[in-house]
Image (cartoon, rainbow, N blue to C red; front, side, top):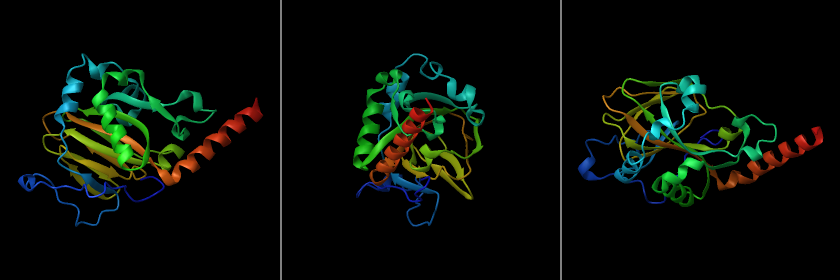
Length: 231
């Protein structure tokens, strides 16, 4: 987590099904600084079916791959984005407030998952998207910079990944499996590659811990006051 280098955890929900012992990497006993598996064995089909039920879901919004060079090979469905009314002259990467996108109403199950996860972890939900990395494609090395990321944790829920999703942060590497929820430290240089033969699909979202909400509010108030003084 940017700024706070420990993941949030579900109380008593770190699960490993014995029937899946061969397919899930057991990392609980491995000391890792930049990755933590939070939960495993989650159902994925309801969310995949919801996406599949929308015509041209991946083609509706292409700004992420069009404008962000390191994301140029990935497709995305925006679920939550920057609240433009709260920018107050800041770069988007420094804006703490977010809101549901207009298109997110098509994905009520994904929205419910995000709200439930944030509530369970006693966090404020930030930006969120569903991301598809086609076979053979990459997300190129980068660091997510800015005040928004510095205060939040980055989470990946793996919906589809035939070989497991390879990700690297700093000098650590993992393979995230279908049905797993992970935290990782996006304040580190990180990258991803789909070395499988099928699309890789994740729900990716950010959470603001309860103890940092006041700090985010103060930053927004300061930006608003600065803009008012400059007017």
